Amino acid sequence: MIKVRQTFFTQKIEDVSSATEREILRLQLGSRIKTGDTVAVTAGSRGISEIASITRTAVHVLKGMGAEPFIVPAMGSHGGATAQGQTEVLARYGIREASMGVPVMSSMDVVDMGMSKMGFPVYIDRYAAEADHIVLINRIKAHTRFSGRIESGLVKMLLVGLGKEKAATIYHRAILEYHFEEIAHSIVPVLLERLPVLFGLAIIENARGEVAELETVLPKKFLEREPELLEKATRLMAKLPFDQTDLLIVDEMGKDISGTGMDTSIIGKKDNSRIKIKRIFVRDLTDKSDGNACGIGLADFTTKRLVDKINYHKTYVNCITGLRPEAAKIPITYSTDREALSHALNTLGLVEPEMARVIRIKNTNDLEELSVSESYKEELDGYRDMEILSEPEIMSFDREGNLLS
Image (cartoon, rainbow, N blue to C red):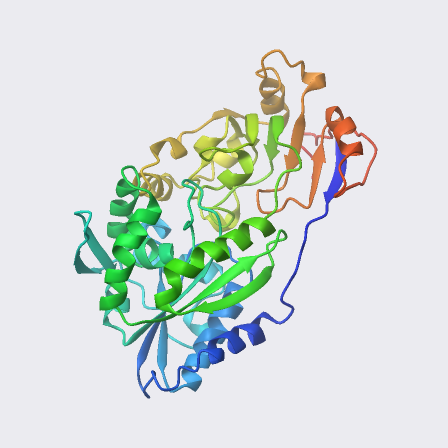
C-alpha cells in the first residue's frame, strides 16, 4: 500500500460564529420579531462541522432581537424514533440546554397540516407548529439515495426532519413513486403558507468537512436557491481519486458520518454513479453512531467488533422508516481484519489478490489522506492533485490480526 494525500480546494470560514451572526443580521428581521416571540430552531442528527457553535450563535442573535428561542430535534426517525433518543443525539454534538442556554423541546408528536396534492398527509413537529417562528439550520449536500436538483438541505429538514417518524415514513414511501423535487415543489409552498418559517441557514462544507460557506435563505427562495447551493456543495465535496476499485477498506462508518453510515456518493451505491467498487470491507462503527448501523448492508464484509456494537432496534427503525431494509443486512462477518481481507481479495473475479486495486480510507468524510495499492502506481504518476507520502509498504497487522492505523 502507498500512502497518498489528495489536494482539494478547501476554502474555509475562519470564524464561524461571527459569520453566522453576520448572516442572520443581514436579513434585518427586527420588524418581524416581537419581544417574547417564540422561535423553534431546528437541529439535526448529522455530524455537521461546528454545528454546536452555529446553533448557539443563532440562538444568541435571536435572543438579542427579543425573541425566546428553543431547539427542536429535526431528524425524522433517528435516535430510535423516541424523544429521549433524539435529545441524546443532539447532546453528543454539544447541543444541550446547558450549553445552548435555551430549552431543547423534544417530542415525537406531530400536527396534521392537511393533505398534499399527491394524496398523502403532511405532518410537522408539534412544538415547531406552535411556535411564533421557525428557523431551519442544515447542511446542503448530496442525498445518499436519490439524485436531483434538491437533495439534502433546508427543504429536507422542513419536510422530513420536522415531520418526525410519521412524516419521514410517508416521504420515504412517496420517493418510490415520485422524485423528491416533485414532492418538494408540491408541498413546500403549502407548508410555507401555513407555517411561520423565518429563514433557513444553509451550511456548505469543504472537502475536509470544515464550514466553507454560510448563507441565510428566505423561505420564498428555498426552492430556487437550494439547487444552486447544492451545485456549490457538490463541487467542494471530497472524492476518491479513482473511479474503478476492486476492494475498498473503510476503517469506520456511522450515522455521524452519513445517513447511510458511508456516503453513497463516495462508495458508488447511488443511482447512475460512475464509481465502480467490487467489494467493500468496513471495519468498525463510530461511538457517535450509538449503535445505529444503518448502511452496514452496503458492505460485503465486516468484523465481529462492529457487529457487537449494533443496536438492532435503532438500526431497524431507521432502515424501515427509510424503506431500506437491505441497509440493515449484516455482511459476511469475521473475527479479524486479516480473515476478512483474505476472503474479500479472493472474491474479485479474475483479478488475482496481488494485482487487486485496493483503497483504504478512514471514513467517507475523511478522504484527504488515504492508502492505495501498488497496482495504482502508474495512475498515481499522472495524477496532478496527489502527493505520494510513502513507498509501497506491506499491510501491517497487530497480534490479533487487525490492521494497524
